Amino acid sequence: MKNIYVDMVGDLFHFGHVELLRRAREFGQKLIVGVHSDETVMTYKRKPVMTMKERIVVIQSCKYVDEVIPDAPLVVTQKYLDDHQIDLIVHGDDLTDEDKHLMFGEVLSKLIMINYTDGISTTSILHRLNYYGHNNHKAKKFRSMLTPGKPGLIMEAHNGLSAKIVQNSGFKGIWGSGLSISAALGVRDANEASWTQVLEVINFMNDATDLPILLDGDTGYGNFNNARRLVQKLDQLGVAGVCLEDKIFPKTNSLLDAKQELADIAEFCGKIRACCDSKLSRDFVVVARIEAFIAGAGLEEALKRANEYEKAGADAILVHSKKATPVEIKEFMAEWNKKENRAPIIIVPTTYFTTYEEFANLGVSLIIWANHNMRASVFAMERVCKQIYEEMSIKNLKDISTVKHVFELQNEDELQEAEKKYLTEWKSD
Ligand code: SPV
Ligand code: MG
Image 1 (cartoon, protein in one colour):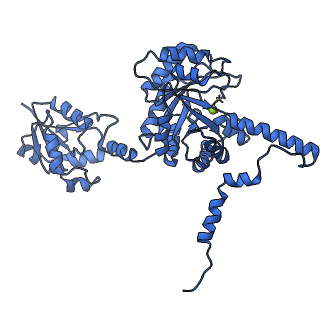
Image 2 (spheres, helix red, strand yellow):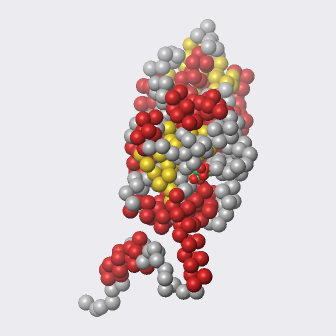
Image 3 (spheres, rainbow, N blue to C red):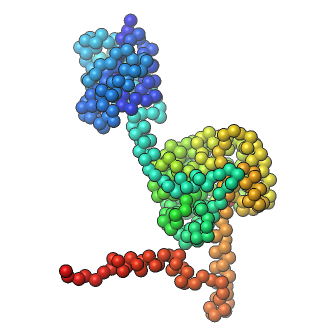
């Protein structure tokens, strides 16, 4: 009969602990667990969330554990092993060589190291709790717009001013279009604007409105690591969500007649998983965008990708198409609707259209008007420039906003009130 020894903190006792104890037990017939005191733990780590007494009660209740030794020493000596009739020590391989010698130097021949379970630790649980402590109320609002059969409608904006205009028009959400933002910056929709430059624009847009914004995050500006950093910054700013498309960096606009290279499915799933795992709030929305139709890869590829991205954790799937009719969307929805539990579907009817009712009947959950404010402003600015240039006068100019209205959009009144309140003259009592 062999007695096995494991020492641990066992704080927030989790799956990784259970796995370690289960596997340690396989080396013998009796498992003895030494539990470090709060004071001992604090000499090398943070204060445990649970007291030693609480940790012992939980560890004792694990079916692989036969005996618990409270206040276990950090340094294990031969005398300690003899006192407790311990034959072997099992420890996770998350130990540095230095620590190994420090803790078990005297009894190294009795030590067995086993793989530590990946992806779970007390620290990672604390991290998750911390993340979900962040409140993103705009993300919550955005989620309520994703209603199959009664799709929400969101409108494109590309700067603070257009975001305000969208809100004043009655829309309940905003599409932060990559095409429009880059066009407004005077560059191509090919990741010529860096992600921090886009972030700066979106920050102004977010401040300018109470509406939730779904940012077009293109392909995530690199690999999973770049994408998850973007997610954290957006969530920090209170942006409602991000949409990532399954193409490669630098991206190509979907409406361009150009080669549309799709991302590898596994790589894109990893990106989606990394983004979901990195959210600071529970509600931040990660949308996976399927470009299979855009790349001419067909319905089967689109469905395969939608299923994989949904499994990877995407909150919604955007299915893009640039046909002149909604034929691809109809085919997709006919298949998608056969699934019992399915992610909401978002569409971008720029090149195709039917009625709102027909999209609703297809079971679509959100409709994006993707670029119409940017195109409207291009049209208006070109007309005005041409007229003023040709006439060398502003006398006949019609159909432009008054300066007064611009002041209203900038909320000038508030500043004038604030000046009365804060720019006061100094007076002695
Ligand atoms: C955008 O608005 O930037 C989009 C939609 O991604 S599209 O331009 O159709 O690709
Ligand atoms: Mg785009």
